[in-house]
Image (cartoon, rainbow, N blue to C red):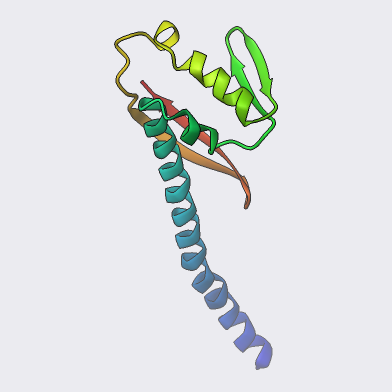
Length: 118
């Protein structure tokens, strides 16, 4: 009888945990998306100091001209002063709009963003 009761209650215990976990994932997704959008605003307003706070060092950038490894905040600031300059993005740059943002969780501490913007 105890075995039957346990087998009946086990699915209820498993499924009762799922909504809490789903809420946690949705909350983490919202936080990650919020960070990405705040980074976009910092980029839009050329707030290079704020941009630098979104990175851990060393950090790597992949670009059509090749990869670059920036060892510290000072190197990143120099990089962004050029990357965000009118010569690179143009005089008519105003802002970028995200068309799609999808967090892909590798593990509980690592997330990759699948984002498309223009």
